[in-house]
Figure 1 (cartoon, rainbow, N blue to C red):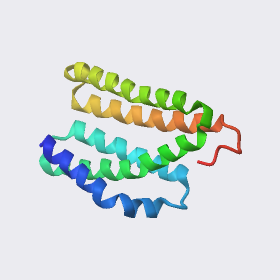
Figure 2: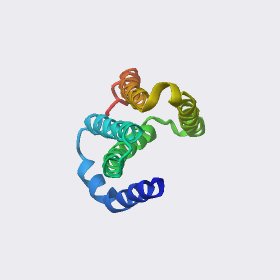
Figure 3: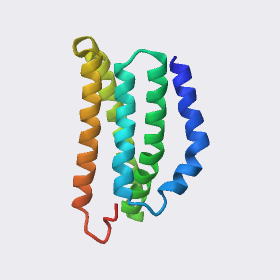
Figure 4: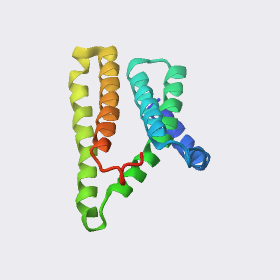
Length: 149
């Protein structure tokens, strides 16, 4: 099942990157970011909670389309915020975010027997909500001439 879900994700990314990119161009990036992150989060939460193939496939579609909206807006904003002389530091810190994600995922595997699928799904939803809130809060701290998300 994992191979099937990964294949579905890959196919959606390959087939829909260009159309989704065209669709999100010249739209409100804040709304696209929030919508994409929400779909991405809900897709993963659904995968943590359900155990039937049709719902797992649906969750793969949801998270894949969320990823197609979330990733480009995030990368675009990151590129806008990085001063050229500090790109290495920004990219290194950005890479640490994914390492932190791996630590959280491993912790959730340890906690899964105690939390159950509902607890893991709820945790994923709260982490996604926290990511949205912290990102929007951080962008408010940036001077207006740089804050166009």
